Length: 311
Image (cartoon, rainbow, N blue to C red; front, side, top):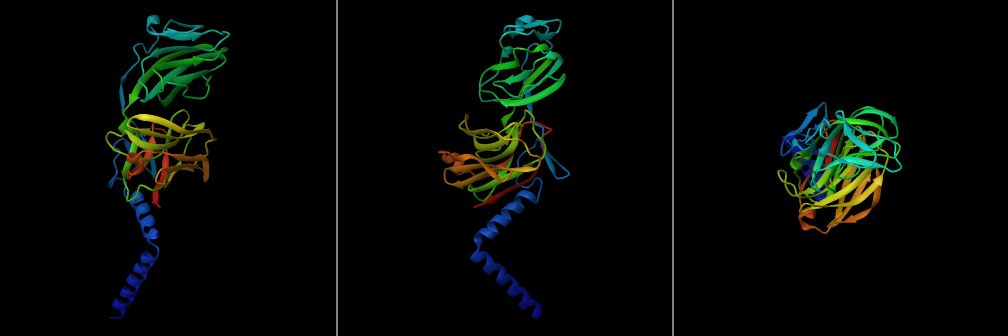
C-alpha cells in the first residue's frame, strides 16, 4: 500500500508539472519523437544513418550532357577564348571572362554537376549550374557541385587569365523528393535545427520546415549552407524566393536553425546567432504545415542532432 501511495503521489506531481507548464511536455516529447527512432514516421528512403550521422545520396535522373568528353565542337557554346578539340575544352588568356556551355537546364530544378580540371597554368574557373555554383577553383582534379538553376545554362566559366583545360563533364537533375527527410510534428510553430558536421563546398545542406508533401514537395522553407553562404529560401507552388543570402564562414558542428516564431514570421540562425532580419512568408500552405526535417543535395554532407521544438 505504501508503494502504491508513493506511485500515486509521483503521478500527481508529474501531472501538476504538465498542468502548470504544458510547453515542457510538448517540447520534450517532440524532441524524443525526432531522435528516438531512425525510421518511425519519417520519410527519406535515400537517407542513411551510420554512427549517429545522417547522410543523403539523392536520386539523379538521366545524363543531360550530349558530349561528356568534349569530342563534338558543335555541341558546345564556346565564348571568346574557348575551344573544343582533342577531347577537351581549353581556354587561352583573354581580356574578358568567358564560358564553354550548353543550354540544357530547367529553371528552379536542382542539378548535380561533375567535371575535371585537367590542367591549369594560370587563373581559375567557376562551375556554372544555372548560375555561379562554387568558389573559383584552379587545382587539377574532379569536382562535384550542386545547385538550383535560375537559367538554362550549364558550363564552365573561365576568368580572363585562365589558361587550361577541362574534361569529363556529367550532369543529372536531382529528383526533388530525394533531397529531404521529413516527418509530421505536433506544431507548425517552433524551431527545426541540426548540426552540420563538414563543409558542403559547393553543395547544400541544412534543415526544412513547412513542407507540403514528402513525395512531391512544392511548398516549404529551407535553411542551408553551401560552404561560403548561408541562405533562407522558400518555395510556393514550385516558385522559389531567396529571402536571405549572406556570406558566413562555415563552422564545423555549428547548428543551423529555422525558427517559425509567429504565423508568418521566420528567422534564420547559425552558430547561435541570427542571420539577417526576420522574414515574412504569406503562404498558408507553408505556415500551417506540420512537416519538417533535413535537407541535403550530396552524399558527402553530414548532419547530426536534428531536433524540432514547438513553441
